[in-house]
Length: 320
Image (tube, rainbow, N blue to C red; front, side):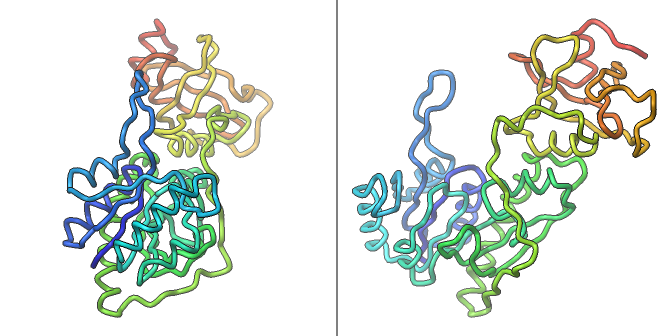
């Protein structure tokens, strides 16, 4: 099948590679413009652009696809290129730009999106992180026929996977990226065979996965330990959860933690949420609104990620 692929980060690169390996003719790749990266702020291509160039696929990087938007000349040039390509379908995965109706209507089979949730749950920008944060036990990939709404199109194929109790967002991202590549190849094969009916999303169960914000990083110990442990997993690797420890002037990043069970109701002698309960080589225990949060992997400002025993030794001690 002759395809256009639109995507930007590593999640999308995995899908692009799967389509190439499956023998599809990817005639054009759309991706976000190169961004400054690293200490020298050198312009760096996206993972999708790097993969496309390696495969010898032409790349376009318009800043907008809206003909009535801020960059109409770039949008018009992109439209003209898409018309020339005359693709059967456009595959979209974490592209980062809104596709106007004029683009959605161009391919013969329309635009198919690889979305990292079981729609209609977790429409929006951060479905992987919000699923972990909410305590979901299952997520997956939905291949969706795109329309003008926010992840509202008909579902074509769904592939589920469990969320393991220790998985970080980074871990789950890698699982879903691979699953997404497999699912889109399967979906296109079924589409060619006429065996891929479209199913409207149910009206019930809609949730929105808001974009991650650095302001969410500080942990609020007036919440239960179980909630905080999920947030730590959800914000690994970005933006990272932070916590103030009484022995350090700056907040530390917490990369791994576990919730020790609480009584469910505070006792008279329960430590104040946020108080240091215990510090030892097997964990730093912090009081919360319900239960204790045991910190297992941390990072000082300007330092590296360290297991808790190394972190505690660096502080010069601990308590039994």
